[in-house]
Length: 377
Image (cartoon, rainbow, N blue to C red; front, side, top):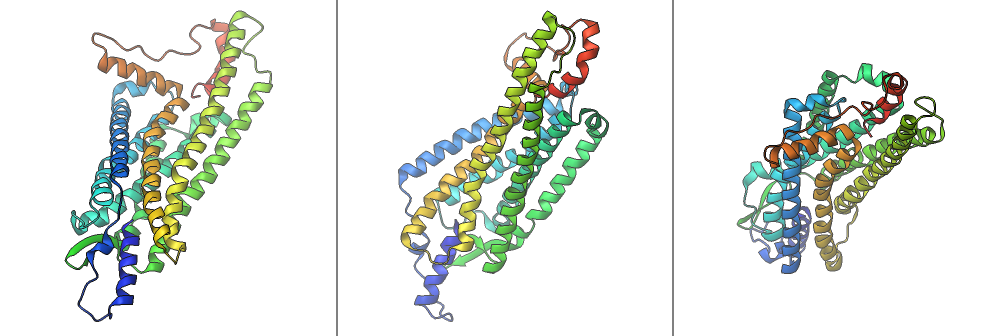
């Protein structure tokens, strides 16, 4: 938002004042006339998202750090914990700053040079980390379903931890140009946080960000989830029976079919939520790159579009753990047992049950292969 304020101010200053003049344009040019209803509404939404996200992610991190997380039969909880860290940092470090200095008090910038550069660096770094975590989780789910035995050999906990560390290092490296692109400048006697690099440099940084944190991840998760959905459809039409006709096999097949349909819906929801929450946000940032003539009408539209897109951006940080808890049945069991353990007095959480524990031993051997593929969905 501040990029446009400064750009508009400097354009007005160039037209109305000589470049060598020591006079400053009126500070009213920095003001944005936002109606109080919009400010209160956005503040209320941000508060709800902050509370829900803080509680949800705290629970996820608590589960991941406890010994009970070892009961999970896959590495999915590592990805969820990493996703929780990136989204939690966005909520805790970026949302309060934006609410104060971009929604309510537009100028002066109140937090200094370091926070100005750090704000954009953290926001973009965590955005990269979130997108890359979603990609890695989609690939991990694809391997677990379509290549279960290969996944069991290759997707160890140690490798998952190293992969997540590499994703975070890559995210911070990709976000590092923001440290040089953004900064604090003075208009008159008041400071604002805005672009300090050239327009072409800022344009390149935003374009690369949109490509690597949205377009490429969207293509990957769409392909991975499409392959998983195709696998689901094949499994529903293929006669994969656990044993000869019996009450147990009929029940297993019925549960299996429901699990497949549930998995397809969840994976579609993952792609849909990613597009809905991130596409408007990147469109708004790219408006700054490609629109050269800013009328008052377009500028006012941009201001309210800014608030709407950032609400969706922060909303993605809240719904991500909900979607991915739906993906993993084991993680879901541990999550609810932890909630019961923390909030229900004198209650001992049950350990996640083996989905084949009620099946006769001779049928279990025939079911293991298929159930391994399905247990995470």
